[in-house]
Image 1 (tube, rainbow, N blue to C red):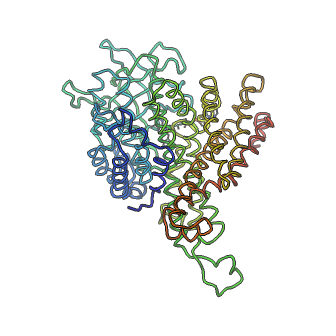
Image 2: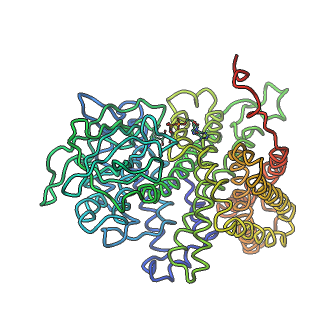
Image 3: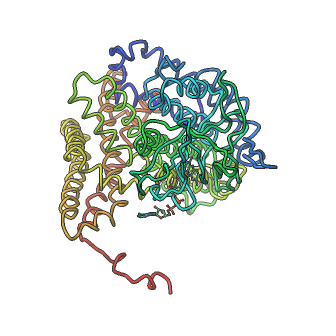
Amino acid sequence: MGNSLVNTRDQKFVLYEQNGIERMFASDRYREFSREVVDMILSEAEKFAVEEILPTYEIGDKQDPAVFKDGKTYAPRCYHEPYRKYCESGWICSVAAPEFGGQGLPISINIACSELFGAANYAFLMYPGLTVGAATLIGTYGNEEQIKKYALKMFSGEWSGTMCLTEPGAGTDVGNLRTSARRLPDGTFSITGTKCFISSGDHDLTEQIVHPVLARIEGDPPGTKGISIFIVPKYRVNKDGGLGEFNDVITGNIEHKMGIKGSATATLNFGENGNCIGELLGNEREGMKVMFQLVNRARLSTGMQGLDLASVSYEHAVQYAKDRIQSRKIEDWNNPAAPAVTIINHPDVRRSLLWMKAHVEGMRAMNYFIAYCIDMERIAASEEEREKMNGFVELLTPIGKAYCSDKAVEICTLGIDIFGGYGYCNEYPMEQYLRDSKIATIYEGTNYIQSLDLVARKLGQNKGRNLINLFGEIASTIEKIKSREELRPKAVYLENALAAVGNLAKSFADWGRGPDYILPILNARPFLMIMGDLVIGWKLLQAAGIAQERLDALYREAGTDETKAHSLAQDNAEIAFYQGKVASANYFAINVLPTVAARCKCISLADKTPLEMVQESFST
Ligand SMILES: Cc1cc2nc3c(=O)[nH]c(=O)nc-3n(C[C@H](O)[C@H](O)[C@H](O)COP(=O)(O)OP(=O)(O)OC[C@H]3O[C@@H](n4cnc5c(N)ncnc54)[C@H](O)[C@@H]3O)c2cc1C
């Protein structure tokens, strides 16, 4: 089936041809999967996305967003039926282990399904997404009783979940939180405090909502080291597993937001009446460690949110450019009698579309590679392999989150431009894509915080081996594609970019040890985007190498050569697809990769103007 959300041919290219996920099916863990099974799952996901989720997209934004009325929060009415079906058909817990009722789906496949769901309506996906994240947290760190009491009902979707970190005075600085936990004689805790901006914090899709809440046990030290995590349900749970009395989790209000208006973002007051009970999850003062399992997965999902919206915006832009007739061809500029053509004929529209296409494909390849590494880490045959895969996940998670979310905003902006004035108006969904994409640069740690994580922790993690391993993979791709004459010049652009980033990473390490330690902190954000371009360039050229081989075979099969490539592509979808892959890589290599060295050079000049300027000079 065709859809206007995601290029499923490219999904399969990345899964099978680039990542080679079929080799995972030889492992014990994933032996029940095969290409046939995966194709079937993807096709069902596409059907569900298009038929059940997509119809809620505009309604949940405009006519029927989440609302707070008379002290109660309501999710969009149109979400209820798809939420029920999403749970009943097992999508909600597809990655969960069979003992939790799941199918143990590899993350690689889950992420491909989630791209379809998120492109159909990310605001909808947040309710089940956070639920399964919180359930996994309890499944991993909870005791048997907590798993039985909470996690199982969350994995089935009967109850939902959240993640509660942020407070009015503790956003980026989580360690500054004020929510407190007082020990009670029976081993539980009395929770008091306010959490704000809590996604799915309150709604009527499920009766019960289970909140993992960060709080400080009275007497514990300040900062992140003194934080513990508690399971705090909206309603207490009776011995028989049924719902008991209200647990004093009162919704103050929900936010009126720029986008994702179907997702209820609540302010929650815990223990306003001194009657809110929480159970410790894991060990005392290990709250950050526990919560980070959820946060790391949420960062991957947020990078995916960027990809989802970039993808759907691009797919719509291409379609519109093929349909919209406006202006004559440039060759006919001075001939008023010449017919107007579809806008895809105009050079700037083609350039914009190819810029979008290259980034969307590169972001897909990067995110799917992170997912693939999570899977490979789980089934690694040796400790060395496991460590290597884990290293890629650690290093690439902040890049995937921040790069994809920042680029999504640019891609969705360009998508509006392609639609002209119609893109700015709400009769088309383009403006909603832009609004819905923006939050991904802010939550799950702002993109600056991702950048700081990259330069201050991840570059040097594992004694720098993770970075060296990544550079090694990129270098081996360069060697491989250099052997192909048509790709060799592009491989050189990647090689230059790699060398420039390598030198800058060394400067960061030197600066970090000396008086200029502030420079990596000051330049973390541009550095992350440079790393993102390097990774995307690598993935696109790797894909081009594969595509070029397939093209050779297809030309041979057709009994022709590259000179007829153009006309062949018009009649053969596979040839058109692979030529498109090579074009994405060529475009990115020539137009983006050379800027990497230039941007590295800027940072190496060690400019400190933003720090040296007096505050008054920012605005007088
Ligand atoms: C729609 C929505 C949904 C959300 N969902 C959730 C949720 O489910 N659970 C949850 O716990 N939270 C959630 N959040 C909160 C979100 O994670 C925070 O908004 C975010 O972490 C930033 O915190 P803040 O808004 O207080 O901004 P601040 O921390 O005040 O930051 C403001 C700016 O200052 C910068 N800044 C702050 N400190 C530093 C520093 N040390 N160095 C450099 N720059 C710095 C930031 O990067 C940012 O640009 C959500 C927010 C929104 C808007």
